[in-house]
Amino acid sequence: MNDDCDGGIPVSPRVIVAHRGVHSAGVLESAFNAQARNLEKVIESVPQLVCAFGLDGRVKYSNSRWRDTFGVSVGEAAEEAILSHLEVDDRQEWLTAWHQALTAGVSYRVEHRVTAPCCGKSRWHVEHGVVVGDGTAGSKRLLITVLQPDERRNVEAELRSLLARKEEFMSIVLHELRNPLAPIANALTLLQRHSADPSVVMRAHGVLTRQIHQVTRLVDDLFNSSRIQQGAIEIRPSVVDIADVVLVAVEAVQPLVDSRRHQLRVSAGKGMFLVHADAARLAQVLTNLLINAAKYTEPGGCISVGAERLDGEVCLHVRDNGIGIAPEQLERVFELYARGTAEPRERMDGLGIGLAVARRLVELQGGSIAIRSEGPGCGSEFTIRMPRADDTSRNRA
Image (cartoon, rainbow, N blue to C red):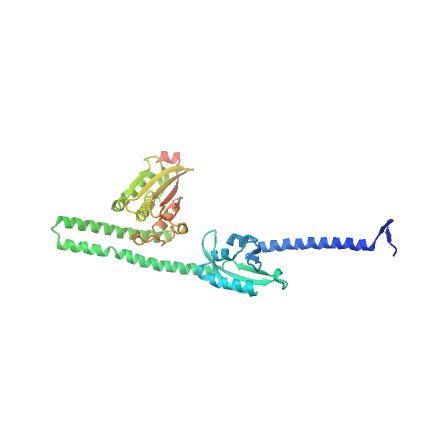
């Protein structure tokens, strides 16, 4: 066969075909890679969690939303990681569907609650699983898509939880308000029968004073909580000496501290720490923190109150060596109606709203409050941060 000529250079048809074949394969590969990159961008942009698994349960591909939620990388087994993020009551249904998909190619749809790592809250998700591939075992993949939270269902779940907590709270209110009635009735009976005995009168007077103070504190907590929720709390800021606030709070909590034989140490020099605050409200906050510390510190334990200046603020610390708080409980201590998880012998009276009131009162004054604990048995530390009074304000004061 004669060779064709192009500009005097012989060109073989076979060479032309081979050249075009290589060129076409490169174009196809480039186009395929471009499509794959585009597809990956699309999967990254969708609001769902997306992941593909081999039939061995190991991750072949996942988008960032899935990785951020379950923390499993490509090549790793995912079953245990997924289970650890699901509510206990939802695990068996998911596990059954998962195994049927991997072993028999059965598609599924399950609803479950997933705990988000960012906030530790459990939210409802809807998960779809389908096996895809060309029919050969090696090419099959289990493709999972998880729809982000169903907000309506989440709101309903949160409302049910809040309603349950409120019902529990009302039960606690009735219990706490009823508790003082028996000792008050007993003290009145003693006064009626032994009114001429000074020692009995003094003892009955002490009982009545303590129990009335307890009822008053419970009613005050309820009243303040209600006013805060209605936005009816009035804040009257001025330049306040932290030492004066500490003195008022310590005087209020001293009987409880003495009854539990606590050591109370105070370190806040007069005139050293001036802040912009409502003196009465700040004293109320500190009193709540000291009462909380006394409640959850074993008799004979230590409680300390101290202040320091830091970055334009005054930090007021309340520390104790009490029962401490588990890490999973730290975010809940300032929630309304939350109560400590102490053993019954350690649990004391209270409605579980003191810390919620304290946080809101601090925030209304432009400050913040935080808690730190190394865990059960390691004590706790509450820190109030308030704006420091500047020199001009200090001179005006």
